[in-house]
Image (cartoon, rainbow, N blue to C red; front, side, top):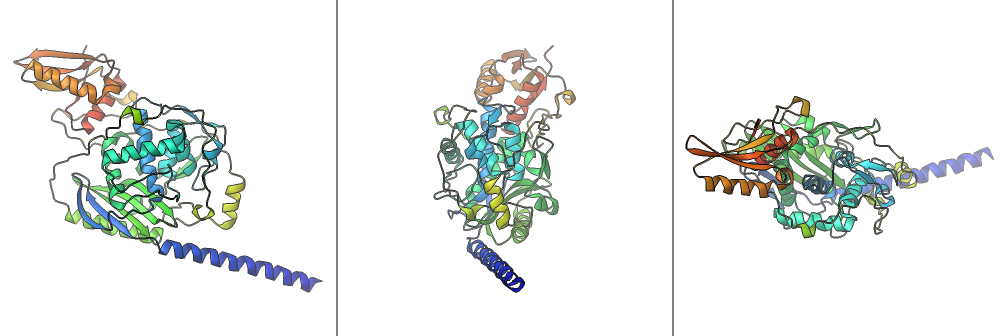
Length: 450
């Protein structure tokens, strides 16, 4: 009897071992089959310095989340939703495959935590929750992502979801993801800081590590952006680094492992800095113009979304440089019983990058409101005629309507010229308006009008 039990036990463990080996081999085979593509761009003017298979339509994996986060920030800046809006988590969002933060269905989580989790931890459940909060459903949000992509010139991209797990027709290219990365850096510089965080607090006393932390630590000047991995995509990364007055963006698709992908990106990054010219004029990308008709009303009470096929082979966890797939046990555990987490703490303040160089004194945002210089208005500069001053005020009002809609315009003659700007702003709106206008290379200086 004892020998029989030993024989059964050996047979069982042998079967498990063989199954595990076959699973790993199938994983390796599909990753090794992923197509390689790469782009190196001078971020200052968008010039392509190196490319290989740049416009080939491939699976973008979690690089998708750059657009998810971009659209979320866009919605916040447009006043459609607030960072402190508590988003109701649907069963659909909570059921997403890892990487995830195990959101609990029915719970309410501040949007700021979801953005953090998607950016730093690459959480798929957080990405879907963001989509449902802003557009009411994943499908509607994907449509908005596609409108935004077209406005940016991403001609090879079609989004089907907010997280990047493999789905038929969900495709992009190395060049398009590099274009997107450039918009993330320059359109909303006050938020880009989030992508360089090695660790982030996502509420409830829980902290998560950045999936890109190894590259950020090892590559000189690296400050973002986003990793990705699925069997179909291989190991992907869009990364940016700044050295001196140069900024380079590199995108790689189809890496064979996290470590080899990071090494290849580092190699291309070094090549990019050598190839980039010195003293290049900064020409940031313009903000994509999306008609309001293509933006869906916010709905933070979504309980469900249309069903989508859950494929076991797309269940992976990004883990720093290894980006190793979850074990079979972890996959089953995640599918059966996702652990709920409560979100309560505040998001730390986001600081802007100091890259804009307006003709006026460069605007400096000093972080928390308590550390900022007093201000109740902004100055746009001096003009030769009153007509020119008024035209500039109108242009800026349209450009920054969200912040300046309730402000009061002023034009005053001073020494043969006309000063123009806005008053009756809060200190927060004054600094925010100047930060955003400076990012668009519009002269701006905060002032105290009293």
